[in-house]
View 1 (cartoon, rainbow, N blue to C red):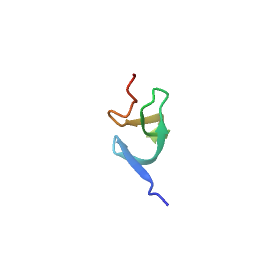
View 2 (view 1 turned 90 degrees about the vertical axis):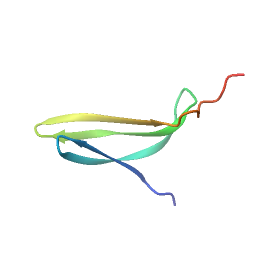
View 3 (view 1 turned 45 degrees about the vertical axis):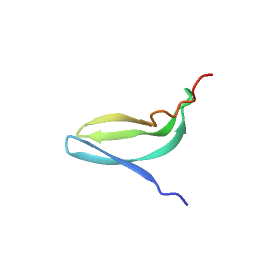
Length: 61
């Protein structure tokens, strides 16, 4: 079983964890992606995180 990849976002003192899932992007690059919503005071925010491996896109021949 593989370990979970977790990132913590902190905005205005509020912290929330998001799980990074492996992702193969349409461009051919690979990496991780997480998304969700976060409550800060009276406002809600949509969170979108991309972690793209540099150099992972296949080279064109």
